[in-house]
Amino acid sequence: MIAQFLETSWMTGLLCAALWGLTFLLAVRRPHLYFNSLLLTLSLMTTVLFASSLFTGEARKSFLLVCFWILSLLLLMIPVLLIISGIQILRRESVCLRHFLSLALGIVIGVGEVAAVLYVLHLWGTIHLGVAGPWLQFFVLTVLYCSFLLLSFILYFIFLQFLPHTMRFNYVIIHGCGLSGGERLTRLLRDRVEKAIEIYNRCETKPVIIPSGGQGKDEKISEARAMQDYLLSRGIPAEHVIPEDRSASTAENLRFSKAIIDARGGEKRIALVSSSFHIYRCLRIAHQQGMKCTGFGSYTALYFLPSALIREFIAIFLNKTFLVWALLGYCCFLTPFLMAAFR
Image (cartoon, rainbow, N blue to C red; front, side):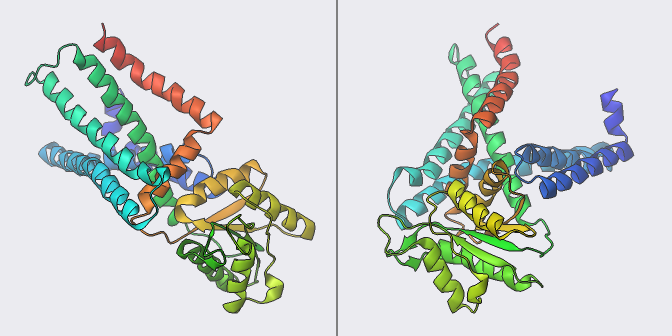
C-alpha cells in the first residue's frame, strides 16, 4: 500500500511540497530547533523520491543509481576533507586539543567507511570475518548513525545561511571572540563586525548595535570596546552603539545584552551576528533566555569551517535533552540489527 502511494507522482509531490513548506516555516519561526535539521534531510530525501517518480523503467533506475553514487562520493569525500582541514588547521593555527577534532573525526569516519566495505564484502561471501562480523557491524552502524546526525546538522547550517530575512531590526548584537595582541580585532571578529555594519546599512530605520564581549586576562581592553572603536571608525554614529563589556561566554553575551535592551524598552526586533558556524548555537541559547532573534552568520575561512562545525555539533550534542533523544534514537536504530546479528 505504501509502495503504491509513493508510486503516484502527484501524491509524492504533494508530500514533498508539504515537507518543504513545514521546513521553511519552522526554520523562520523556530530556527533553534534541531528537529529542523532532520526535517530538512527528510525533505531532501522526499525530493529525490519525487524526482524519481517522474521517470519510468530503466530511466528511473538510472536516476536512482546516479543519486546513489553522488551520495556515496559525498560520503567518501567527508573523511578526506576533514583530514585535509585538520592538517591545515594544525599548520596555520596553534596546536591544541580542539584543533585535532577535524583530523580525529576524519580518521574515525574513514575507518568506519573502510569497515563498511569490509562488512559488505563479508555479506557477499568474498571474505570471512568470523566472530568479528557482528562487532564490525556494530561499529559500522554506530559511525553511520553519528554521521547521519552530523550530516543533518551541516545541511541545516548551510540552509540557514540562505534564508531570506526582512531587514527591520531595532538591535544588532555582535558576539565577541577574542582579540589579537590584546587590543586588535582578529580576522574572525572583524568579519562579524562587518556583517553587523552590512545589516545596519540595509535597515531603513537604523538599529542600535550592541558589541558584546568582556576583557580577557590577556587583553588590554574589552572586546566590546575594540568593536566599538572599529564601528565608529567605519562611520557608525556613537549614539547607535551601546557596548556590553561584562560577558565572558555566549550565554552571557545574550543575557547582558538582553538586560540593555529590556532597560531601553520599545520594540525588540533583534539580529544576532556571529561566525556562520556559531550562529545556530547562539539561536538555541537565545531561545532559552526568552529572546526571539534572527541569526546572521559572517564569513568563515573554508579550512577552519569543518573543525568549527564539529565543535559546535559536540556542544549541542552534549546538551542533556539532545543527548537523551540522540541515545534513544541510537538504541531504536541499532537494536533490530544487533538482534539479527547475535541471534
